[in-house]
Amino acid sequence: MSETLPPFLAACRRLPVPHTPIWIMRQAGRYLPEYRALREKHDFLTLMRTPELAAEVTLQPIRRFALDAAILFADIMTPLDGLDLGLRFAPGPVIERPLRTAAAVEAFAAHRGAGGVESVDQAIRLVRERLPREVPLICFAGAPFTLFCYLVEGRASKHFPTARAFLYAEPAASALLLDVLADIAIAYLEAQARAGAQALMLFDSWAGLLARDEYARVCLPPMRKVLAAVGHLGLPRIYFPLDGAPLLADAATLPVEVLGVDWRTPLSRAREIVGPTLALQGNLDPMALFADDAELDRRIDRVLEEAGSGPAHIFNLGHGIEATTDPDKVARLVDRVHRATAVPTFAQSTV
Ligand code: 1CP
Image (tube, rainbow, N blue to C red):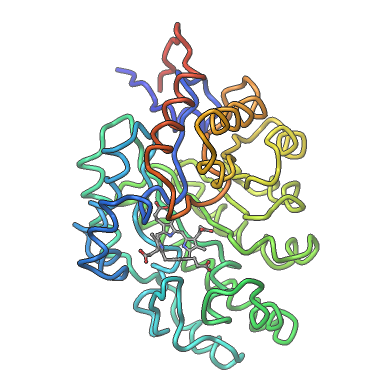
């Protein structure tokens, strides 16, 4: 018997959809009062490491809004948890023992497995038991270069000067570290797939710090390794290079089904650059959720127009939702995207 494919998974494959699917980066998090209530009782690492709590936070936005996908509550740093780096959150990631010498990188290279796998495995199983079938679960990892930035810098930073200097000062150790991080991401994504992940997303939040030739030299090879290695799992792969406008043509050469676009590049322009073979995900400016309702509606409609009428669009914000956003605006957004794109006579695609 054939089954209908949930709209999010159909859009990842550029198949016809009954409406444009929507989910929101950082949909599980601080703008939700029910998340803040849990955070008063537990610190972030405890939430992340406790499967029952991580599952609960993952499901919170799904109960409130008609979202078309869930994303596992974890962090890009989760696979580095337990690898003796002294990871903590304040509120961004802090590495107590950053890797700043070739010797430190070589010692770290002894690890090729991923941390955090046990709790993530259990959280994914709990979420899958509780999610409705039409809401698939996205799991994710940090792109090797983005994790490299935190590991060398030791903490969040605007321009990651220590990490970028390390690329020039220690090219061999940098290449080794990026390769180790690729292997860690592969092990972690494979574990997530075994547990029940239905799509895999790679966040490359700091790719935009690099010039195009540096991006091609430093970021792309480990990224290509990760994406190629997880291809056999048969899950849609989503790659999101933040601030990636100059990098989109190169990013589109990666083996992915979906490219995430931040709010700075109109989707029509992204489509011209990447061509027809990928689905695009994005890209309402997260700050547009602070506009009055009429202006918000216009901004939503603009993104939909930019995406065009084809099926290959997943609506999202152009980056994570701000912590001070009013949840009612999210409800309005989800509802408007669904209504504006509903196909009344939709004959469901089958698998
Ligand atoms: O104090 C708190 O409550 C913790 C805040 C928080 C949350 C809710 C952090 C610390 N991480 C997360 C969860 C998280 N992080 C998710 C799952 C929830 C969801 O999306 O619904 C995801 C996908 C991430 C991904 C993530 N973490 C990225 C990539 C996306 C992006 O924002 O560019 C990055 C860069 C991080 C690092 C990180 N972890 C936490 C913070 C505050 C940060 C950003 C730090 C910085 O700006 O450098």
